[in-house]
Image 1: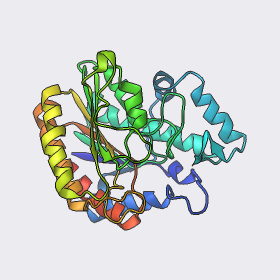
Image 2 (image 1 turned 120 degrees about the vertical axis):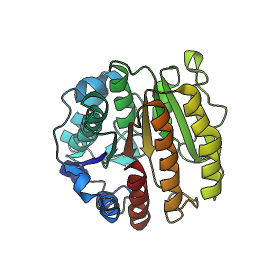
Image 3 (image 1 turned 180 degrees about the vertical axis):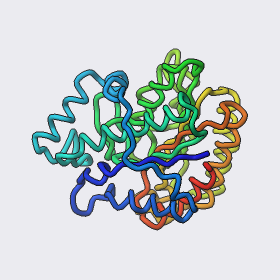
Length: 312
């Protein structure tokens, strides 16, 4: 069974006129859920996880949460760089994105209410580093979930698969020295944020537990499916994780204005189906997916529809 999670506070994160990371993305993603016939699986404005601040402090630096909160409350319009516009409600939205993701993980792995979940939240998270906001991202939600999962009995190894067109530098940064969280990414390269070369495989104890599959601009379904089948699935089978997380960015779609790639929504469905099949072999089919990028509204709706069908 699949649950889909969202919250009305996500609409209040105001990025300003013309910014690609807009609240319209929530409507597009929810339209995709509706197309998939799964509208009744959407849980809105549910309980936020009580350990959110503790997990944020475990994932990010000690002062980072307060720095963002003070910037939003103080009326600042940018946080750390020009690419990160904020409003007075941005802290609440970013905090709720983590809290919603943790609540979804709790339902899957601790309460065992469902096998899979998809979180439709904004702002996204995978570019956020320990003490640095980047690429529209403030708190790294998927990293926070991985940290929480590692505290749960019986979860020794967590696998994160990121198929956003942009490399998840923040997630890699947070786990590259560890062997208990495996990070694998398919992305365009060279491209923003400049990281994600094939030679980046982890550091020290984490060496061999980061896998980057960089693709040139203009690649499409064939290259993505080859990478999934030949690299990602093999890595999951070798690692045998207790939990699988997905950073689901849909900006490699051929319609997306930022990606420059040629992936179709059907391929996103096939990629997701392969991950679910692999999860069935290793972790009772339990998968949590978090929305990352995707900036063409029709492409996002179509891709989310295929993604949640495969998850369900």
